[in-house]
Length: 520
Image 1 (cartoon, rainbow, N blue to C red):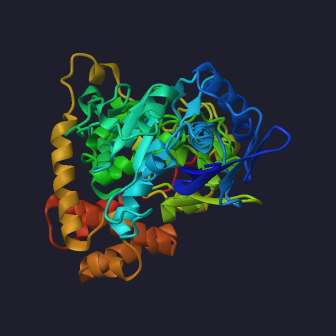
Image 2 (cartoon, rainbow, N blue to C red):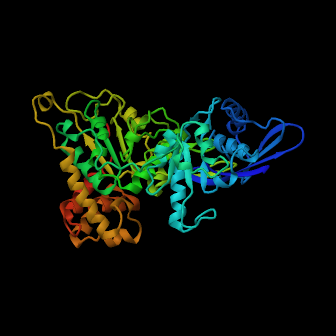
């Protein structure tokens, strides 16, 4: 037959939308036309597909008028993922493959000129899209109750196989795929060069740097424990070399192990950004962009939209060192994601939404020289310099950071010949217990409480309420600050195993929302 249909998927944000590759061969002036809102790299598939088919010994219908339509026509398509389905469509339309056998499969892969298959971005998003079809009860094609099978290059297939119950096949070369769909009744499974990927088991606990490496800093360690238990954001302020970066790099080791759903969400975003590696499966990401990063690098952007650092840190940690040195526009762009846990990238032609449920861990010096309030060295900054430096952080942004903690510099005798601090494993056990209490009580972490849920879960007795009202009045807190203090107090109570929030829990929470230091 001169018309064939091959199924694939296009990426739009974290979604993998279905695409039908329609190939028609007709008599007329020889040409190769590709339509369907294709980007430049997709249009270049004409040359890759032509060379791959010819160099593998198959027949390219060069004397035909070839029309390839990527439907739906209004969905943008990018990257070389359509090379393989286009090649299979041409071979099926020219009678070299059995088009009926292609039903029930979806294909993606970039072709080299010699026919080798190269990996593509977003393979995990494709597999997740099929899994969601099964969960929603909307089974595609003509085989209800059975998911389509995915055929991908080897590295991409290993990503896609992370989704439970997915049926993924890997191939190294165009000929490996062609052999499965030749005309005739030969069962594809008995042929060589075609392998089904077995599901990859998830690790029980990933390896992270140990917090025992950090000596001293009891206040900062306590703040990180509270942040890990409740899902709160943290700002650490201290002199250079006081251990802020070491603490932040070990924060992921305090968090509970990722669930399969969380691991899949995190890996899917990393796959879109081209950062996924199997050794990082079920490892909470820690993204630490340089302070010269732009707003687009942090929140995402481009055309087509790509995830930024806040999305690549989904279900993990976003560490912003030297926080005041970041561009003002980049920092202000963090306001909405810190509240909503998602980021929407809108462009003239399209709109994409990425998840951004990250924990912010930020670090800064108190002044340009870094030694304001230090007991080891004198600060040489003027009050005006300190004010300008700290003024780089807007009040609305600081208002959204739950915990503000000072990290003091350690003297030599506190570092040398002193025992290591408490290990991450013991702290993590307390964090897990506190999170389990919160989830059993309200179904979410304390940081995620909103509206009436805050009043219901953070009820105070008269003494605690009076203490909080007095502190909020003296410190000039906003309504958001009061709510965040309540949620931190609820986390402190969970760590203590208390059913109700007591005045001691509120008092400790108030200490973590003090104003920044000011110059003498």
